[in-house]
Length: 120
Image (cartoon, rainbow, N blue to C red; front, top):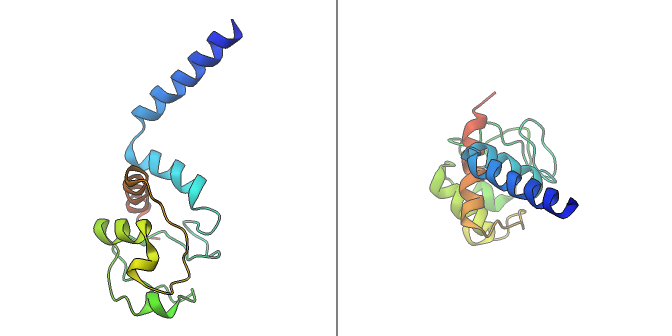
C-alpha cells in the first residue's frame, strides 16, 4: 500500500512539474544548481542576477568581474546566456565562472527565470 502511495506521489509531482511554467522550472533549476554562487538581489561569489537579461556583461558596478568577462563586450540575451551557461570558458577564456549547465532544457528554463526577474 505504501509503495502505491509513494508511486502516486512521485507521479503527481512529475505531473505538477510538467505543468509548471518555464519560469517556475527555471527557478527550481536556479535554486538547485546556481544559488550556491548567485542570488537575484545579492552579490555572492557571483554577481546578483536580477536585471541581468538585457544588461551589458560585467556592468554592475558593485561586483568585481574577471578581466575576461569585462572584455567580452556583449549584452545578455537568450543566445548569449545559452552560450555562456553551456561553457563560460569558451566565451571568455580565463573567466572566474567554472560552472557549466550542460542540459539545454535546463539552460532554457534558467534563462526564462532570469528574464522574469526583470530589474530592480
